Image (tube, rainbow, N blue to C red):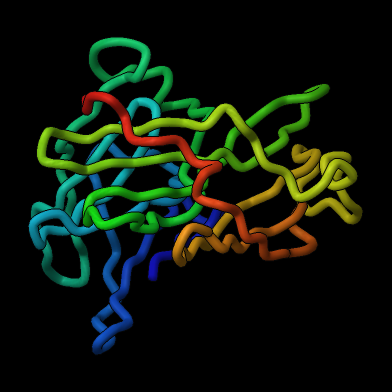
Amino acid sequence: MTFNTGHFQRPNNIYLVRLSPEPSQLYRVDYFERRNIEKNWAFFLRDGVLHALYDLDPLTVLRESNRRDGVISFERLQARNLSGEGPDPKASKTPKLTIGTQLAGIGSSPDSYVLVAHRRFYWRGKRIYLGKPVRFDAGRDGFSVRFSPDVWAHSLSALAGSKPKHNPNLLSCTYFSGIMVSNDHATLGYGVNDVGHSIAQIPLSRWPKAHSSAI
């Protein structure tokens, strides 16, 4: 389980705890190039080592480098701007696509995952957040990510926002926070405009297929 402490302190903190088979201690995660306010990291194991999908564009993958005194430190394993060579500092400071849910494994491969990201839009100076299906592969040849052209909202009426508004800069949002894969469907838990919540079941066919080549 992972959670972050929100925008009430700067920098905010992200925590990780193992719940099964026995609860572990609570760990704060750290990365020396992290932003002042972090959203979500998506954690996964590769060859028994803890990794984290840190950013989607530039595609940035971290690997655990040290664990002590309740802190897990990470180092950058890979970062590449999907539209060119190398990470783009401007993209990393003002991302339009952020991680929503954790990773959910699919198929027989232990290195293939789906998640739902958040795509940010603006309308008359107000922000709108919608879900975007993402496929992530962490195979032997490297890491790859593919984005669906779709964006998901709770409903057309929800796009107009709700009252009361807890954030005056936000028009509407469909925030995806939970994912569970079973057979050929993914069950998603999400919030609606910070005032409601819902659950949806979406066929895995709505997610992109694997990349033809890893980056």
